[in-house]
Structure formats: C-alpha cells, structure tokens
Length: 119
Image 1 (cartoon, rainbow, N blue to C red):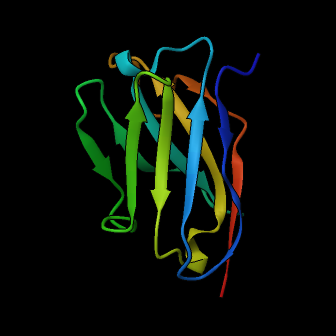
Image 2: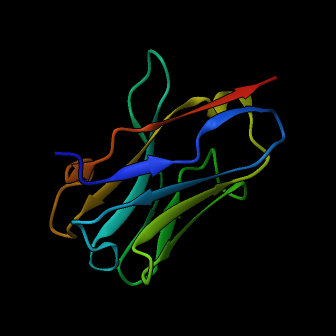
Image 3: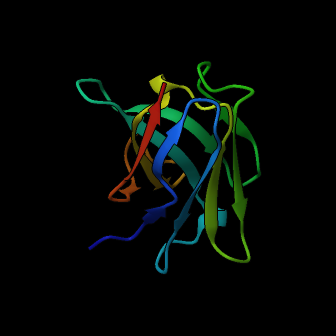
C-alpha cells in the first residue's frame, strides 16, 4: 500500500526550476523526519535533503544553495524547491518518512517522480 505520493517531476532544461510535492493521507509529516532522496541510473539512492519535526534541515553538498526542503503541516505536504537545475540532478526523486528512532534510509517510501534535466 502506497502511503506517500510524489508529484511535480518533469523534463526541464538546465538552469530551470521545479517544485516537487509529497503528500500522504496516512502519515503525519510534522511528527516524522521527512526526506527527499534520489536515484540516478546505475547509482545508489542518495539523500538530497531532510527536515525534522522541529524544522531543522540538512542537504547534500551537491544541492546546497540550489534546493530547499519545506513542509506545510496544515496541508501535510512536503516540498522540494529545486532551482538552477543541472543535468546531474537527473534522477527519480523519492519522498521518505521515518520516525526519529528509525534508521536513516528506512521508513515509508513513495513510488518516486522522474526529474530529467537536459543540457
């Protein structure tokens, strides 16, 4: 059963922006650590950004200054604002929710949304 649903991916040119969204009807985002991961072809899934229940955020070095993770508790929606996109950002992006006591990389996952950045 899919508990997280991502949207907002697409095909864009380098330098463009996209905003990804993640929603759920069964998981309360504000009490969980929420994260965006991505997986490019032939590569391992990697953490892009995460936000804790307290609002603390962390980012992969490769996206710092270009991407912003945020959460709307009223809408129970997680966002990833992606600016100045590069071809190397091309990947399937996944939303993740986990309790603080759950290991990083575990928890609930969405089915992913494809982001393709052309040069």
